Image 1 (cartoon, rainbow over the protein chains, first blue to last red):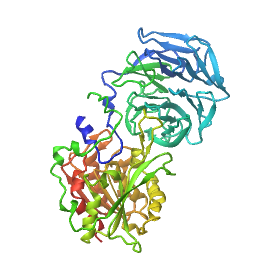
Image 2 (image 1 turned 90 degrees about the horizontal axis):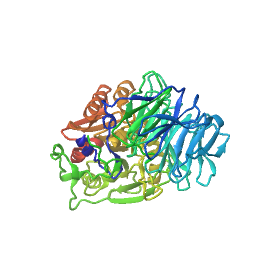
Image 3 (image 1 turned 90 degrees about the vertical axis):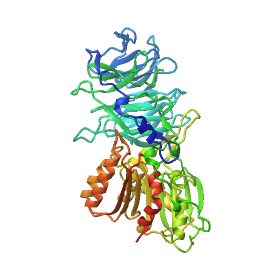
Image 4 (image 1 turned 180 degrees about the vertical axis):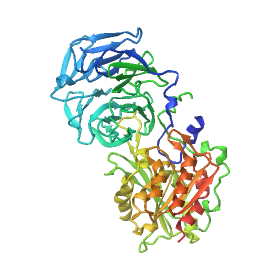
Length: 292
Length: 289
C-alpha cells in the first residue's frame, strides 16, 4: 500500500487523494453485529461527543432512542416525538430534527423542550454545520433547504437532485453532499460564507444494482479524514474526498435495507447502520467526523 | 496498513522527489534540453479561469505556449495538456515548451500552440478549509462535458488572441493518468474537434467507469483518431483496477478496431518519467502526416 501511496505522486500541481481501498476501512474479523432490535423502521442515526448513538423508529417508535456507549444498552431517551426521520446534535447541544410526521424542522433540548424552526415541509434528513446553518432534504419536491444561523429559510437548491435523501457535510465544512434516492449520484456544492450553495455538480457516482437505474442512495455521513459513507441498495458505499468510489460495505442482511449510517462508540470508530427493524454496528479502522 | 493521519485527505505531491528505481532508467534526451540558437517560444500564464459555465464555481490555472515561428496570418495547430501545470514547467518531467521549440525548429512537428490547463478546484471559503479538487470529476468521468469545456470555453478564449486551426487533424490533447483517459475521452466524444491523443499511464480503469473503453472501442464504428498510449509494467494495481492490464487491453482493442495507434509498455511505475523521456519521439510520431 505504501508503494501505491508514493506512486500516486503525480505530475501536476493539482490535489490528489490517497488511494484507499475497502481493506483500509473495515476488518473482515469485525463483521456486523446486531445491537438493537424490535423496531419497525429505524432511522435518524446521530451521535454525541461521548459516542452515544441516538436513533428513531420513524414508523413505529415513540421518540428518540439512545444506545449507551458505555453499557451498550438501549433506552427511550426522549418520549412523545414520534416520526423523526433525520437527527443531529448541533454545537449548542440541542438535537436538530426532521420531524417528518409533523412536516416540520425542530430543535430539541436534551430535556425534550421543542422549538419549531420551520413548518410545512416534507423533510427527510438534515445536517447542521458548525457555523450554525441547517440543511435538509425534501425528497418529493427535489429541494435542498437551508435554515441559516439567524433562522432565515432559503431554498438552496431545487430540481437538480433526483429525490434528494441523505445529507452530510465535508470534514472541513466547505462542501455539502446530498445523495439521490431516485438516481445514481451524490451531489456536492460549495458552501459560501453566508451558508448558500454554489457550484452544484453530480460529484460522486454510486454503483447501481444490476438492472436498475437508481442506487437508492439514502443516509450519509462523513469520516474524519473526509471520505463519505452513503447507504444504498447495495450496501454502504464509500467515496474519497475527490469523489471516487473506494468500496462498498455489504449490508448486514443481504435481503434487508440500510437507510441511515453514523459512527459512534467511545472512540467514534463503530459504524452503525439502521437496517429496518434493527440497528447493526461493526468496528472499523476509521473514525467518524460528527460529534467529535 | 497504518492510516497515515496527515497524508490523509489530499496532498500536494512533487513527483520527482519520489521516483521509484524502475523509473530511473528514463531520462530526458537532447530534444528536451534548451539548445543555443533554437528560437524559444513564449509561455504566458493566463489569468485564472474562474467563470466556467460548464464547471460553475471552479477556478483553475492555465498557461499558453506560443512558438517563435507563429505568424498571425497562419493558423497554428493546437495541443492541450491536462494537468498543464506539470507539463509546462521548465524543469519538470516533460518540459513541453522546450521540446516544442526543438522539434518545431527542426521541422519535426508543425507550428503548434500549447494550452496547459489544470483541473478546476472549488476555492475554500475560509483559511481552515482546503480547496476541493474537481480533477477526478472532470477527468475520470465519461461523456462530452470536458470536451465541451475545452471547445466552448477555452479554445474560443485563446482564439481571441491567436489564430488556431479549425482542422481537427491539427488538434491534439495529452494527459497523464486520469488526464490520459480524459484526453482519450475528449477525442472519443468530439473527433470533430480533436483527433490526436497522447495518454501516459492512462487510467483506463474503473475510477468512474472508464474501464468500458476497450469494449466500446471494439464495438463502435472506428473514429478518425490517432492515439499514443504509454504505460509501465509496474504501474498501479488498486481498487480501481490494474493500469498495465487496462492499457494493454486498450491497445489490443485499438489494434482490433484498426486504429492508427502506438503503444509503449515500459518498466515504470505510476510516474511520468518514461512519458517525459520519450515525448520528443511521441510528438514526431503524433504529428507525422
